[in-house]
Image (cartoon, rainbow, N blue to C red; front, side, top):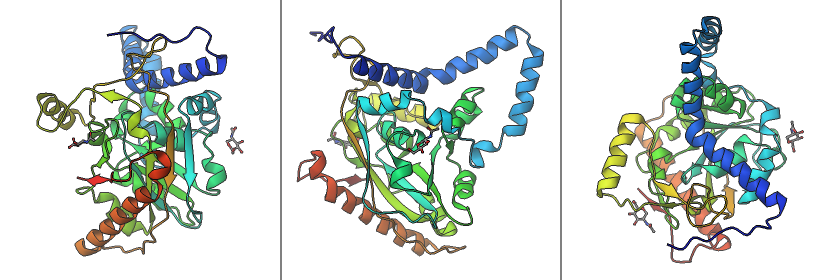
Length: 335
Ligand SMILES: *[C@@H]1O[C@H](CO)[C@@H](O)[C@H](O)[C@H]1NC(C)=O
Ligand SMILES: *[C@@H]1O[C@H](CO)[C@@H](O)[C@H](O)[C@H]1NC(C)=O
């Protein structure tokens, strides 16, 4: 294999962008483990006072990830995140206004490998969510196990991340006078195993819990398609039925999160490594589907709204695909 090295005379801004992305990949893959190690070091060092104080804090704060979280505007506005956004770059695209008198459930597709678009758009202050959708507060829902990790949970909460449990989504969508937007990556970890460049497969046909919650809370449903999300990394081939896929699915069912074997480029060369490719992401927010609140939705209600949502998502993709370089004959595949 021929290694392609990065040129020496890269402008400072681009170096800072790469550094911002590198620390983010590290946070995603290793920061939680580092936090656990720090906690264990405290235990080994018998720092019982610190440990008891922290455990008391955990006890008092345990519900927060399911009760709207605890965002810190300062962390969301770190200049770091501007460099992060500019690396790819990432763009948030509005198709219509969202009236802040309602609450919304935003379905985000596709998961991609590390959900870069969702994080940048909904957890940091630099892609313009606040200007495009004034009066709306976005909450990105992630797997609950992240919030069981000591110290890391505080960090995650500061970005406005909240748990993806039913209780947590209900909490966000129960705001009396509207103005909340629950963002859910519908395909979940499972979809990341299909995050190969060019892949348009979405795991959505069996996922109906979000439809039920939207009905119960009367939250309007908004499909989001993030063009470019699957182009950031190559992934070791894992077609359905292969040995690797079998192992990955097994691990996912045991641990709850998936382990795609992804790779792209490094810091000093462009041939291998865990730094994603510099490819643009366009996160297009579709039009809302109005939902009338119903405290006891029937299976038919859920089916019908699910179908409506699939159609809206398909239509959103078709309307915008040409602009973002998807060939005419390619369409979304729902599975
Ligand atoms: C976040 O962005 C909004 C809108 O651009 C801005 O008004 C606000 O001051 C920013 N917050 C911080 C802490 O910089
Ligand atoms: C996308 O993933 C699905 C499911 O693994 C697979 O069947 C399909 O062939 C893939 N398509 C492309 C273009 O990679």
